[in-house]
Length: 123
Image 1 (cartoon, rainbow, N blue to C red):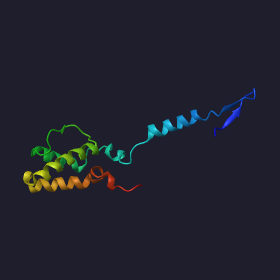
Image 2 (image 1 turned 45 degrees about the vertical axis):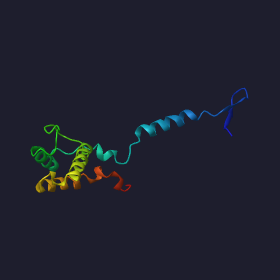
Image 3 (image 1 turned 45 degrees about the horizontal axis):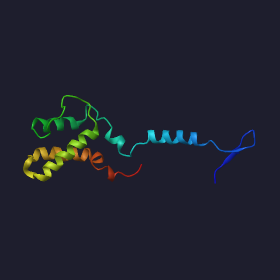
Image 4 (image 1 turned 30 degrees about the vertical axis):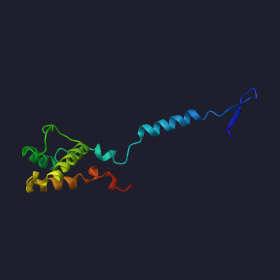
């Protein structure tokens, strides 16, 4: 059943509520973000300890190609690189010295929410 209204001639015509409903839908869709998008898009403060840990890994040849001189970095970008390194370390555990593994574990802990967004609870 369709809602109708009468015009001045007495003819029935559908209500024109679809335009406001479409605008509302468009606003909702444009402003919607996944729950973890805020974390991944968050900028790491330039004085954060993670920069020095990453620079040490980079200097030792374990961070790979990275624009190390440019700051700030996004937390999501760091988490993506950490995930790649975790795969390499899992494939070859002896690949990295113990002291640098400690640095990596500290970084894994710091970026755990970005590495595992499914673990986050709804706020």
